[in-house]
Structures are given as structure tokens and as C-alpha cells.
Amino acid sequence: MKGFLYTLKAVLWSFVGLRRKSDFEQDPAKLKPIHVIVAALLAAALFIGILITVVKLVVSQ
Image 1 (cartoon, rainbow, N blue to C red):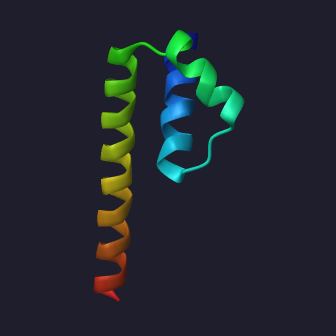
Image 2 (image 1 turned 90 degrees about the vertical axis):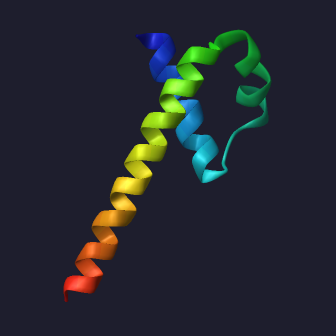
């Protein structure tokens, strides 16, 4: 679970575009590809859900 949380943190920082170089250099040794895929899909779904919610709130007013 700790490894997946590290991966989720890395993916979320990548979505924002902020990542320390030292963390970026350690990623190949720490990240598992399946964790990256799952974390990216979860983050993308969350992002899309937030966008849809914001649009519905703006349009309804």
C-alpha cells in the first residue's frame, strides 16, 4: 500500500506539473507500471468528475 501511495503522489504532482528533480530521478526504481496506470486512471476520473461538477454548478445558476 505504501508503494501505491507513493505512486499516487507522484502522479498527482505530475498532473500539476510540479516535481522535484531528485524525486523524478528516483521514480524508475520505486514506481511499478501497474500502479502508475491505476493511479493515473483514478486521478483522471477524479479530475473529470470535478470538472463536470463545476460546469453543472455554473450552468445551473
